[in-house]
Amino acid sequence: MSKKRALLSVSDRTGLADLAAALLRHGFELVSTGGTAEHLAAAGLPVTQAGEVTGFPEVFGGRVKTLHPVLFGGVLFDRSVERHREEAAAHSIGPVDVVAVNLYPFEATVARPDVVFGEAIEKIDVGGPSLLRAAAKNHAHVAVLCDPADYAAFAAELDANGGASTPETRRRLAAKAFRRTAAYDAAISAWITARADAEPFPERLTLSWELGATLRYGENPHQRGAFYRASASPASALGRFVSLQGKELSYNNLLDADAALVTTRRVGPGTLTIVKHRIPSGIARGRSGAEAFERAWASDPVAGFGGVVAYAGRIDRAAAEALTSRFLEVVVAEEVDEEARALLAKKPNLRVLTVSPEPEPVRRLEVRGIDGGLLVQDADVEPGAAETWKVVSHRAPTAAETDALLFLERAVRGVVSNAIVVGGADATYGIGGGRTSRVDACRDAVGKAGARAKGAAAASDAFFPFPDGLLVLAEAGVTAVVEPGGSVKDADVIDAANAHGLALVFSGRRHFRH
Image 1 (cartoon, rainbow, N blue to C red):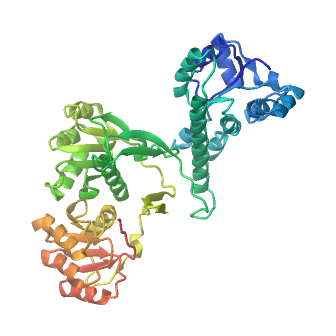
Image 2 (cartoon, rainbow, N blue to C red; image 1 turned 135 degrees about the horizontal axis):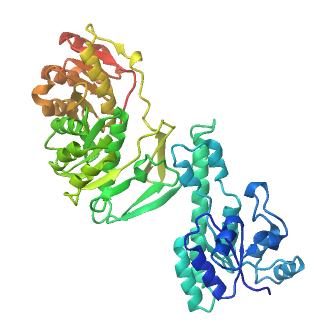
Image 3 (cartoon, rainbow, N blue to C red; image 1 turned 45 degrees about the horizontal axis):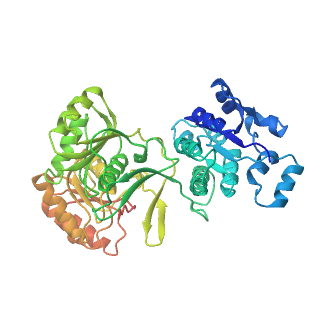
C-alpha cells in the first residue's frame, strides 16, 4: 500500500500551513493544485502538484484541475474490498486518506451589490463539491475537511493517535461536508433561479441557511432559539447586519428589527420606523434623522418606549442625541457617523446595527413556516402606481391630501392587519394594527392621533366591509382616505364618504400583513 496522501485544494487558506505541517509530521504526502500549492511552497513545505500525480495538467483556466480518475479513485476506493485494492494497484491509483477542500466563495460573491452575472458563474465550484462528496461518502477510510475551523482539532487528534483519525471524527466531518455541499448547491440554485426566465415557484424549493448565532432563548425563556442567515443574501439584508455595540440580540429583537426595516424600506429613503411587537407605533420621514425620529415618536410616545428603530439613512450627532434621549432596545441604520457612535456608546446596552443601503429590487420571496411545511410568496415590495388610483367620492383629494395619501398608503403596508394609519404627508399620527376588527383598528388609530386626526388623511390595508370603520375616521375629523375597494358594500361606504365630505380613493391593491 502506498504512503499516506492528503489532497489539499482550498479557496480560503486560513490555517492551511499549520494543517499541512501536522500532516507532514505524520508522514503524509501533500498533493495540491494551483494557488494552494504555491501557498504551501511559499511556506517552505514540500508539495506535489496534482498534475504530477494524474499526468494531466490543469486546463480551461483552472476549470478542470482535480476531476481525474487517479485522484477520485484514490478518494473513493473501498480499502476493505479486495477487488477494489486490486483495481487500484492495477491502475496505479494510490489512496487519498485526507481531503481538505473549501469552495469558491460563491455566496460572498453574489452577496455583493455590484456583482455581474459572468463573475458569479465563474465562482461556481465543480471539482471542490465533487471531492467533498466523494471523501464524505468514503468516510470509513477518508477524513474530509471543508472548514478551516476544524483544522486545529483534527491536527490535535492526529498527534494524539499516531497520525490516525477516529471513525467518530470522520463521520462527524462527513456530515458537515454533506451539509456544506447541499447548502452550496442550494445557494447557486436560488441565485440563478431568481435570474432565469423560470416558473415563479419551482417544483423543488431548496433553501440554504447558515448559523448566524445561537440565541439565549426563543420568544420565551423555555424555548430554544437560533438565528440563521441566507447563505447568498445581499449585504443590504438584515441577515448581514454589522453590530456596532450593545447587548446580545434576542429572538424578539430580531423579529422587531426585521419588521421595522421592512416597513422603513417600503416607504422609502429618509424614513424612520419605530416598532413594538412587530407593529409600528410610528412611521415618519424628515429632513434629518432627528426630525424623522421625533415625528415618528409623536405618533405614539407611550408605545415607543423600549421600541426598535430602523432608519433608511445616516445617523448623525443630532439623531443620536434624539435616540439616546429615549429608552430604546435596538437601532438599525444604513450608516452611523463617528460623532453619533460616541454618543450612542454612552448607552452600552443599546444594540446598534448597520445594514447596507437597499439595492435595486430583485424578486424576493418571503418564507414562513407552518406545521409540517412552508408558505412562500413574493414579497410585497412593488411601489404601486398611484396613477391607477380611482377617486370614487364626489370630492377629489386636494394636493396636500394626495401627498398624505401617497405616504400613508406605503406606510400601512408595514402594519399588521387589520391595519389603519392616520397621518399627514410625512408622518403617521396614529396607527391601529393587529386587530380582528377593522372598526377597532380605526378607533385605535384616531385615538392615538387625538386632535391631530382633524384634517388628517388615512389609509386602510384592505377594504371597509361596512361603512362603520370609515364613519369612525370621519367623525374624528379625517378628510381623505385611501383603501383598495372591492367590498360588496362599496356603494354604502362611498355614500358615507360623500355624506361627510370625505375624499375617498380606491387604490385597487390590498396590503394584508399577517
